Image (cartoon, rainbow, N blue to C red; front, side):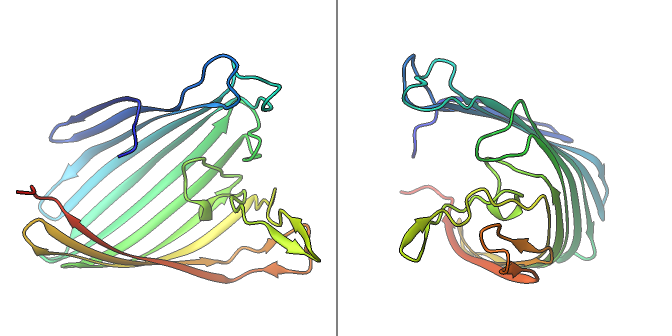
Length: 250
């Protein structure tokens, strides 16, 4: 496993689950060429209603990301110091239709702000709304969702939801290497989401899971370097197969 430097605090009761942590990803000394990076976060779930068929939770999330350089060398790397704060609060409702069927609805409101304009992220503040509805039948889950973001960026988030392109591919045009997607932004971004997953325990402590995710972009994307190439109504997907063993090796 990768070496991690930091601390973590976990607490769990009948109604409250808390996980708070600090990860110092990059430590620097005076004169270093690199930037220091540290991430601190907290997830909290409060069980508001717990009945035989209904369960209602209030999830709260916070993430602090610090990109520092107070003691690094300006001669070796330009200084770009900032701290970003991401926060989310939502509602998680689950209804048990039968012993093998359930319906779950989740919605989150997200907000981020930064002390200064991040060099690669461009926006100092933004918002997002994520809603998901899932139907579960035994080992099968079918879900749909919707994402709406405005000036939203996150250094530790999924690239597809952000308003600033994180794509680093370089392209050749007439033999000249160009950063085709560098600086591309979409201040208002919306996606329709789909999910199909199957999870099952094959043998004691041995689990298999397959998942397919769909992303339908109904907002328009248009690159400044190629204004004629306007992309809208784009469908994308990813899939995965996972095998997990959680028992003891004897």
